[in-house]
Amino acid sequence: MIERIETERLILRKAEDRDLDLIWERVWRQEELADMMLWTPTPTRGEAIERLERTKAYQRDNCAYFICLKATDEPIGFGGCREIAPGDWDETGLCIAKAWQGLGYGKESLRALVELAFRELGGRRFRASCFHENAASAATIRSCGFVYAGSGTETRERDGYPYLCDRFVLDAGPEYARRSGVTGRTVTVTVDRPLGSRHPEHADLLYPVNYGFVPGVPGGDGEEQDVYILGVDRPLASFTGRVIAVIRRLDDAEDKWVAAPETCAFTPEAIRAAVDFQERFFRSELIF
Ligand SMILES: CC(C)(COP(=O)(O)OP(=O)(O)OC[C@H]1O[C@@H](n2cnc3c(N)ncnc32)[C@H](O)[C@@H]1OP(=O)(O)O)[C@@H](O)C(=O)NCCC(=O)NCCS
Picture 1 (tube, helix red, strand yellow):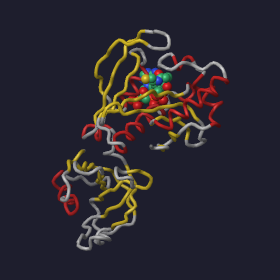
Picture 2 (cartoon, protein in one colour; picture 1 turned 45 degrees about the vertical axis):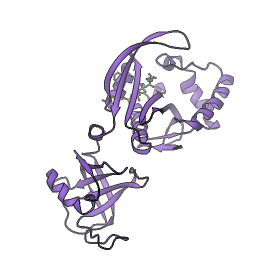
Picture 3 (tube, rainbow, N blue to C red; picture 1 turned 120 degrees about the vertical axis):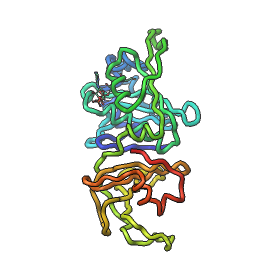
Picture 4 (cartoon, protein in one colour; picture 1 turned 180 degrees about the vertical axis):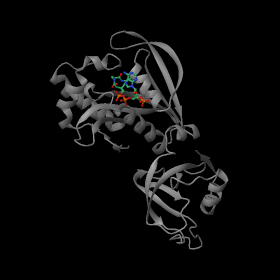
């Protein structure tokens, strides 16, 4: 179970006792938030205490989190997802408190959940849905690259309210990588295998390019994200540049990023040739 996810401005973490008053005030007692969702508002603090216990138990066994501001660790919402069939993930509710809506936190949270499912948990498809009239939710879902997959009438269990449910899907794979905006991103790479150095275990492997990792950005193998650096022909200790391609390995969990100085462009053939010293041991596709 992944206990905690960090994004640029948020931490998605498990509920704690000290969250009670803030999550109750900001989220659980807000009927306006519950209106567009399936959960029941919690009018009293006593009920909130019980709800927190239920929430803690649920979160212990599920990919469900309180969404907290990184700066203060205070909860401003909740979100989660679950695997409904092998590789097939469903968002189980995303909610941001009123005062923090419209600031990009919903999108940041949904992206984090998708990344969790696709990169950490082997997910291949992610589903999300919302009430047809929930423009903010549909916009948030679409802004993460989901595509519309149809609508259906459903009934809300708590009050028998009939609603039109719009459904969206996002598939892992080249399209996702492209839409998730890895390419084009500016990254700073710590170079631990400079050009000309040898692999620490395989002495016959000589690095013809600088190769390193992006501190703080997890890659598919649980380590930090690896990056090939093209367009610089001297050994480096650190490098800042643009991600120009993603190498998606088809027989391995890891993706590799390819970065280059802002001013350099490479054809797919040139990228392939530059990384062949290592990538020839894998089947892969190049994503731009
Ligand atoms: C839906 C919700 C999670 C969105 O979170 P948010 O933090 O307010 O949204 P963001 O600021 O991240 O915005 C994400 C995108 O949606 C757009 N958006 C946000 N609110 C919008 C609105 N009211 N109308 C249209 N678009 C809107 C933003 O412009 C942004 O698009 P962009 O990235 O293309 O610019 C949040 O409003 C919420 O919790 N609402 C109440 C509960 C709810 O409806 N949950 C969803 C149930 S499925």
